[in-house]
Length: 493
Ligand code: GLN
Picture (cartoon, rainbow, N blue to C red):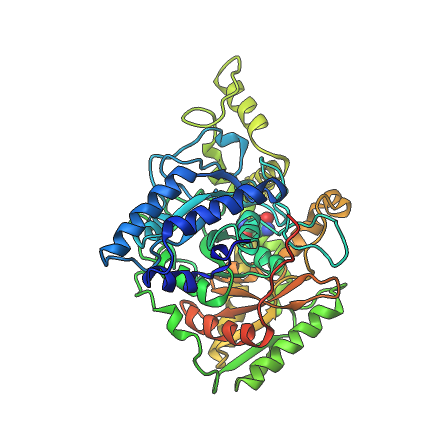
């Protein structure tokens, strides 16, 4: 890892402004780091070297002219779910073969408007469905972390596994990601990085390939809390092209770092425990509580009684919306086409060849729960449960709680091609047990690394906030980060 790629976004920004380094050198350093590492990690599925160097050159010119944007010259990786004009955008699916949109997603456009540089597109679970980045058409991403003394390949989490691995291995300064049920926070926790899923409506979903539209949110994965705050500030905006985006000013998130926690109330929900959860996770949680107490926060026990229904309800609502969103991939306008004897046969053959097993499973579940006769029993019921989950949080916040502290995941990173998990998809879904409630309620949630387990792998804590109160999450996560320190994998790639 060269010096340049070890700089955080905040450090690189300051050095670029002071003209101690150039965006061109910084970008070139990342491009060579990617070239050296990607064979082992498979984090990037497309590297846009020429574009990156062109953008960096333009950044250097703007810096020279005194016109630097907030992210001027900062090289970023972009999850393959974001539409990027003229550049590979396939949600890591075979069915979108060759798709290069003629538009740019609002979130990525916001980043380029602020001067950021695109290094390429990052690997992910197909259509963002998964928790291990193993459903990608481009093969699994390998976690840069390994257990102490072991060569076993571990997953980086999913679905934003490429984003998390690239950030942890310093193959970009920061990355975009998306979170429908935990896909920013779980991979962040598995890789010792920081990931925030902002409030539903904080970032525009326009130009982002849809998975479950009422749950999907974009957010950053970064090396530390400050960098996550810097990235979210640029990504977030109201957008006429997404009517669910919210017209509220985007705060200067970085300014909330270092603020006191005095007078804050942190809720600890009793329900965020599962059978077989390693003792170390419970211990880490208690450690997190102690850190926040030391920083002046008051700790209160709270109850979120409908938590236990969140996972089953999510795995009805999310597939239902996915089955509808994915109906558009039919081989007619773009992507893969497998010819058939007539148009119905062409649709069938295209979809059979184009979608992977997990995506097909979701489409079938979704179609089933929305079908006449089952709609009331499953979909409608799940929507009611969703309202109750949301109300649990509202009651806690109404009682004066400012933020809620929980573990981010029920385990540390697991092995690639784990037989147990492959045999039972529901076991894989259990990864999302602490994160899906937040999407169901539309709330912001941040995962911050808090320690290593006895295998030497990172573990994260999650903070959940009130709608549009990301600032409280940043300042509280920053306190945890300061107490816990930062974590980087030992380089083997
Ligand atoms: N792991 C969850 C799923 O597979 C969440 C995915 C996501 O947040 N995109 O649905």
